[in-house]
Image (tube, rainbow, N blue to C red; front, top):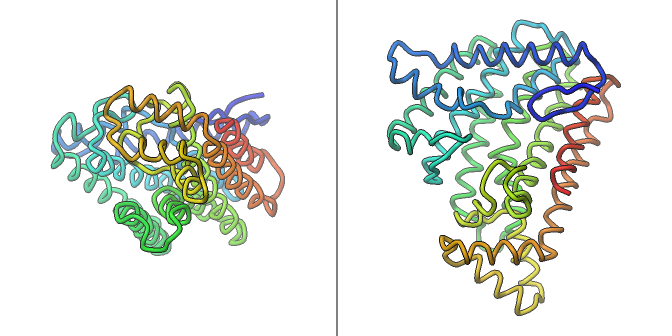
Length: 336
């Protein structure tokens, strides 16, 4: 049993492991090259999060999807770099919106420098991604542009909140499909497309990417409440403290509105209040951990992981398909 990628996807194929690791190493080199500038300060700011590391989930999916065609095709690695650059750019902008002080174990760009540097660095990364994707052809440019539109739309939907009469859970799923699922879907699509895989395969891995992306975000929602911080890599209750209504909170509110107990409503009021105080945050975490809403959020996560797994059914059997299925297993393991 060997391991592929930063997520520890277990496979039994040495050739796949070697190839994927080589591909990811090439992506890493490509990220460093793509973030260089003639202005040393821009290089420093642009490489700040690149050098901090990260899961590199999107490049990993590009590499796995490319196994259904020619994984050594010249567009595969650049496509993975494009997707990761786009993701990194959104992180610079997200940290400004969230007023985050840390990212990947290092000070966020806005904390180290200021908001202006962070937003402009994010723009710089978007521009580099756009230059690279132009070399991949007009179809790739269109796909990237459409995904970017969905990503921004998801962020705007989150900022605006659900409209009058709109189901908050459905609204939230639309938000994370745009913010997270869209770019992960592009990772799968680019990998298969650049490798010359059949169109039917491209469609399958695109659908898989969106669903597994949503599942991973929902798993993070659960971990923000349920973990001790070691698994999620961040302090438990971070989303709660920042007032982000993730799936466990939405399920709690839904249950409270549908004939919930007085204790349910009290917990909703606590969560809606100021959680900057550590004692209040601890009480909110304890309440959610003991509430059926957390289990409901876990089931939501598993449902999307199962949906992602079902998407893989038409693909030919082999190590690449098994590794993609293992991502679904990983979501389940993180959620339990």
